[in-house]
Structures are given as structure tokens and as C-alpha cells.
Length: 328
Image 1 (cartoon, helix red, strand yellow):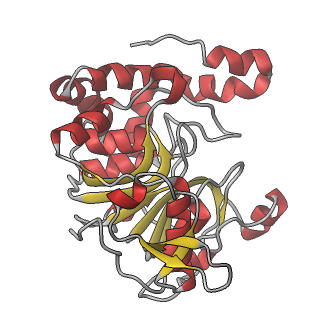
Image 2 (cartoon, rainbow, N blue to C red; image 1 turned 45 degrees about the vertical axis):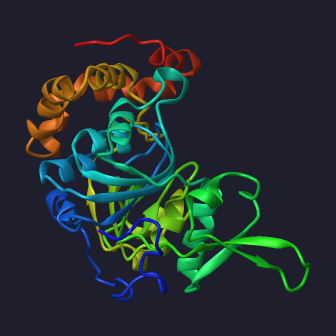
């Protein structure tokens, strides 16, 4: 794997041109096969919303190893990859479960043990690094991390004196992930994606990465995407996609379903119990014990889908979903 402190393949966004196949629909397993050992991956969504969990579970079933994860604010997605032994370097700005459960147990253990190399970053340096890759530039300037310890952690960052203002600026190198892994609410057969709500960094990930794989809740016509409000990520960025209802579970994917608090609590307790308990209580029943996405949906049950879809009934309904306790 490349040294995380050196620029990763500076230059244009991808080597293989734009993707114009009229039908990019494929199976989940074929999507996962596009990620290779040692790849730099950019995982879409953030915190407890719209994370591509079905694809990540498929990666773990393939026993993928040596991934470098880059991103901003993430939670169960990166923690799951760490708990499954798939990550060797984390270039994330934050990985945790926020106020609901706290720090990410698998991620913390992996980083503290040295199994995962920590390459701390911040949201805006990542934004500028991705922008540089999108524009085909070797670097972009930033001001926001001056006065912090980030320049000491990243010897690849350089300083210059601005020729126009005389101010000192920090330069961050371009970052072009190998694969962006996204989940969207809607897509069409050609690969156009429609994201409802905040896109987080997904659009930058799509533009900067060499390939883009996506899962969607439902595949509709291009005309329907336009009716829904337009296309967020155009087809020519997307390599392949699969229709995977509940593909972000247990994170939220509005308007289809809310965040699954009981399932996340079950996950968190298993992760907090250590590697052996996590393997027995979570990885086996929900990842390796489910040969495909259909098996995962059967494992969590149809009642889960109905319960999480009930958020739209009103304020009392969605508030109740966040007061639920762990269920077996």
C-alpha cells in the first residue's frame, strides 16, 4: 500500500475516461469485486445517515484487506470495516457514534494496537485535496489548520508566501481515491444518482475518485429523477450500481427509513465486548452468516423495515424510534 503521507497518484480524476454504458446495473457481489486489496476508498454518507453498509458488508465477506479509508465524519461504517480487519490506514477526521453511544470501539482498538495506522486529517484539508484532484492540480491552498499540530503530523503539507497578499498559506497535495463507495436514494439504469438531503462529500468523492460504485434504494427512470428534483451525481462518474433496498441499514436513508437505534445498540455492545465477542455476536450473524443482501434483510426481518418507515407518521413517531432499547 502507498505511504499515507505521500500524495496518492496526483493528477486527473481517473485513468479510464468517462463511463457511458447505457445500463450499469449489476449485482452487489460484482460491485464489491471492483474494490481491491490495498485500495484507497472514500465512503459516502456520514455519521448515522446514508452510509453504504450493504456494500461494506459485501467487502468483508470477500475478506478484503489493506484498505486506506479517507473521509470526514463517519461512524458504524468505518468501525465495521476495522472490526472486520479490512482497514490498514485511517485518514478520517472523525469516527464515532456521537452522543448516542460514544466512541467507536473497533476503530479505537485497531488504532491503539497499531493494526490501523492513524493519519489524522480535518474536513477542510480533505475538501481541498479532493478539489485539487478534480481540477487536475497537484495541490490546493488552505488557511484553516494554521496554528494547529496538523502540519507537524503531515510533512507532505508545504507552506508558501502568497505572491498577491504576502500571507503565509499551507498547501495540501491532491488526493484521488481509487474507489468512491456511495449510497443514494434514487438512481437510473445509466448511473445517474439522486441524493435526498445533505450530500456530505459524496459529489466531491465521485468527481475525484477513479471509480465510483453505488447502491440505491430504488432504480427509476431518468425522467422520474428529474421530477424528484434533478440529478446529484451524473452518470459519467459512476462505474456501476445496484438496487439494494435498506442498503444503508442500520444508518438512516430518508425518506425511506430512519436510523435503527436498537440494531446500532446491539452492534455497539458487541463491538465494546472485544474482537471475539464482536465476531460471534455481530460479524457471524449479520455479515458472514448472510451470503447476500436478501439474507441480511431476512435476518433483520420485515418488521424492522415497517418500524423504521414509521418515522414519517409524525413527530411522536420519529421521536419514539430514538428512545427504543436493545432488542434481541
